[in-house]
Length: 97
View 1 (cartoon, rainbow, N blue to C red):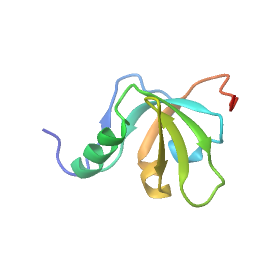
View 2 (cartoon, rainbow, N blue to C red; view 1 turned 45 degrees about the vertical axis):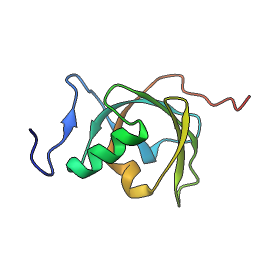
View 3 (tube, helix red, strand yellow; view 1 turned 60 degrees about the vertical axis):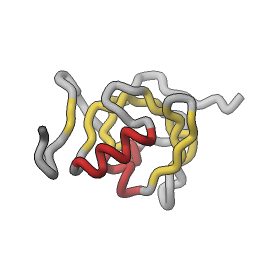
View 4 (cartoon, one colour; view 1 turned 120 degrees about the horizontal axis):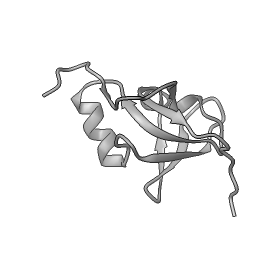
């Protein structure tokens, strides 16, 4: 059992970036959730689990960001998005069609 404030992560995570730093169209694999058990539970309920692919569909640099995860569109506040660390996939582009 992890203690409050510990990080859930996968081995070999490499260079990680906060989900909120990705531009629209960029994709990443969730590698780490920073925060306590309450946040990890909420993130999992929204579909953000270690190893899942997430695509940012909207990020204006302020306000919430919109992310596609597990076939669902999810709006995240900036604070939540900063706690989700992803490994950016190369060749990330967005095609809304």
